[in-house]
Image 1: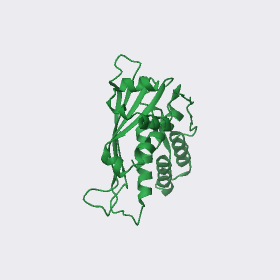
Image 2 (image 1 turned 120 degrees about the vertical axis):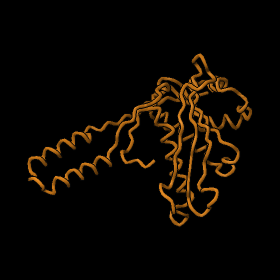
Image 3 (image 1 turned 30 degrees about the vertical axis):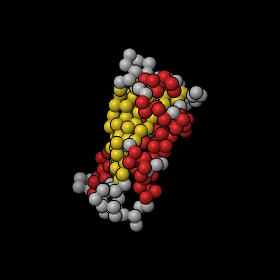
Image 4 (image 1 turned 90 degrees about the vertical axis):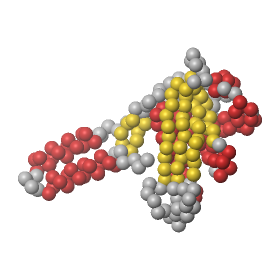
Length: 233
């Protein structure tokens, strides 16, 4: 199987909220008289800047670096029947995001992984170590999608989207190739508050936001991620 390599894209922010805050404070101390409303305005401006900025969240697991990996997304038949596009889209999106950021030696592209699953329906009966060996990878990222829905079962007229999964990493070159070397849980929702229906967001829009949020939360633990300070999910 052909594997293609990728180098991580690294972006840095030279102007930090701490530096901006210090500069604002210095200016205000010089120009503001006691009780002057400009002081309050200055701190409000800094707080607004802090919220609109970003921070780096360090990786919880760095074992994908310099390794070959593949992403396996699984879901029960109900999820696949109601949302047939979800497993393929998540497989491709998660694979691409990790390939761009983790500094892997190579990876199985999402479309290749989907073709493998289609051509080998017996893959479900194989151990994780066997799958990794057949795919030619040292790391197998398994995304067990346990919930994906757009509405509360009791109310089909309002959006109440949820996507939840357990993500584990199999280290096929380690002493325990069938056991999880890393595990984290993902749970995202949309909309962020109740009362929204099809007149506010289309089905496609709700799925798109849920999928985007899920991919971010599923992949961020694998690299030093730049995350908005005011993130809502």
